[in-house]
Image (tube, rainbow, N blue to C red; front, side, top):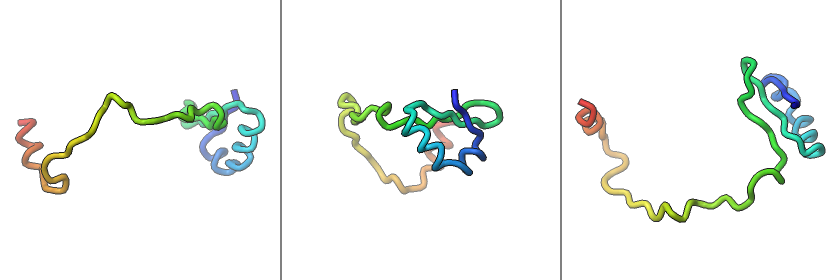
Length: 77
């Protein structure tokens, strides 16, 4: 497992990306001793990422920008 801290990754991002492209192995990013992210080559990422056809259409009712704080307060009281 190849891993870099966030400051190391910031300072060496170009080299890290080149390494991932050439080796096809992921690189993990570490924060506070824990792996929090990984950089992977694009051939490992699914190309067919499309919305779930089972979700259907979304219908928005009402005013999205109206002040709804009173509605929220009454919903939880």
